[in-house]
Image 1: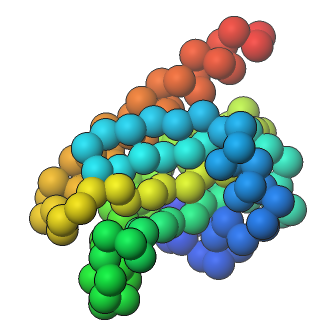
Image 2: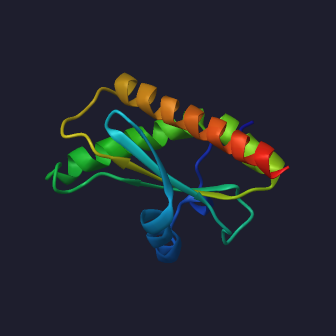
Length: 135
């Protein structure tokens, strides 16, 4: 359980090739100010999920604001990744995720948490459906 509620560097999405692939042909889910791009890929290590976060400089000029939003998104994801992580680990699948904040103003932590949880549940449901169709 403690392994799941962490977000070590080996789970960070760093590959430019995979990020480009996500933006070009990945699937997306939207809820409120948040968009999640995702795709099943072959990752460089045995971790089931690699994830990245982004807040546009165009909408948030000050780095302190962008960093605060990214920190909040990382925390929400870290605390709510359990179902998705276990599903992928059990099915021996790998997933690249990229969470983008597209809102034009700061949401409260609770509002941001609610939107990301909705997306993660939708994503988990979609993956379960795909995995059942594959079998």
